[in-house]
Image 1 (cartoon, rainbow, N blue to C red):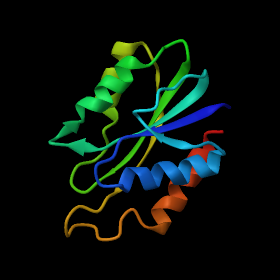
Image 2: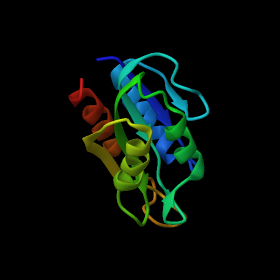
Image 3: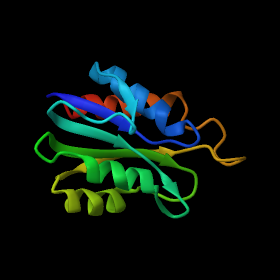
Image 4: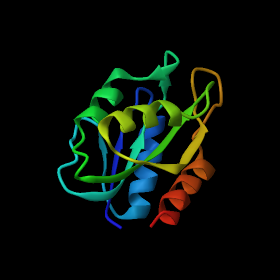
Length: 135
């Protein structure tokens, strides 16, 4: 399986998850400002809720993807209050003609005084194990 890891983060939490997953997969975690230029079987896409939706930059990134280069998207992220962004990302992926894997990784993320230290070492290990399980 050829994989790529891209992420969007404002706090650094999603970047930490992306790096753990990328290390497990033997690839580099890159921000969404870096396009996916090679054909990949799986694009691991990290993001979170901001103002109760995915960030406009994440939407634009998904729309910029070449559906002929992406086999499927696997969603991952963290959030302090809300749960998964899966449905929002899937809606954008469908518009772009790219399938979404039903599996995803989500954990609590630190925000202000909430969930201090998250994602923690256990979350990072779980993210890495999740990524490896999709190989």
